Image 1: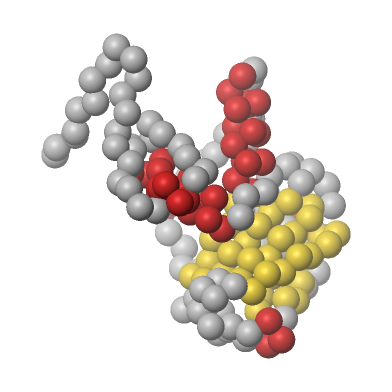
Image 2: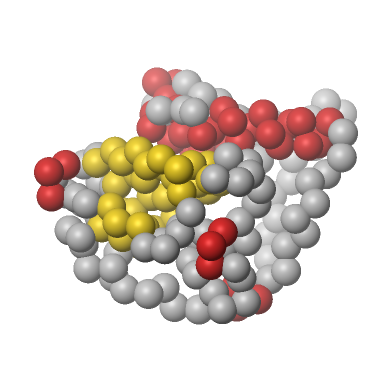
Length: 167
């Protein structure tokens, strides 16, 4: 089974299909019955990235089609060079997400970080993920040259002490 992941902004969806060793000339993306303006595909050594531009802005509740959701609002992407199988349903599929963005500065900050991540190259994304995870959410770096060599330590805010949670 091929693993995949996606993230989205107001105007686009970026789908990542983790399939090693694919060749640019053997990968084809086919959309079936969905509304998408343009597609950009990048084939890398370990994955295939597919950028889909939404015809109408907004948040998609899921990438895959569902009988409870209008199928005209979401794309279905597939690669003919991989053996894609439908994703198994999980308990997380039942999670209800509030589509309303937080007001004020939180919404602006959220939009800023989504734009930063979506426009970043692979090294910058890797640095952002590693620094945020290793620092327990207290640091975010875009410099892979620095983050790749060192472990990011937890940095408690001024006046606070970082404590490790042990179960």
